Figure 1: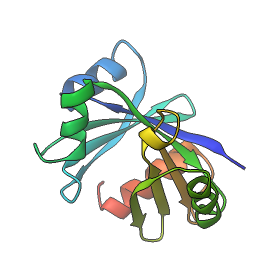
Figure 2: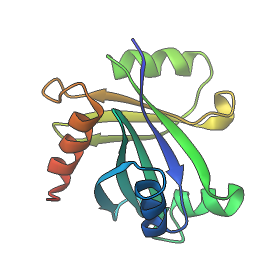
Figure 3: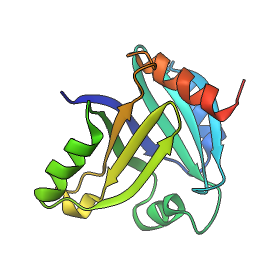
Figure 4: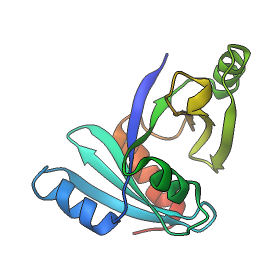
Length: 151
């Protein structure tokens, strides 16, 4: 069964975006994680019971910087929860999708990202959460926070 996990938005100024979304838009900023490996910062946000992320590149060589340069700020990808990542990836690649990134957050989740050019213009991030992580968006965010060592 598939379920939307989150929508990710590429931004040029993370602090300004967090302020706009928590102020006038009334959402909750739960925490921010820096990813040296991928060259970006992610703010994990809750809108009611739903998660979205704001992502700012921190390196001119990151794929997020390239994305913003080519397309400008806006929706970058949609995260989708899956029960079996291996089976999902096998099915979509057999149907023509190209996996462009795979990553693991040990004890939290495994993920695979599909290139938008191979899947109807939509970049999908398929996510299989570890069985010990609760089912809600807040559970997912808190598991990511714990894995990052952020208070």
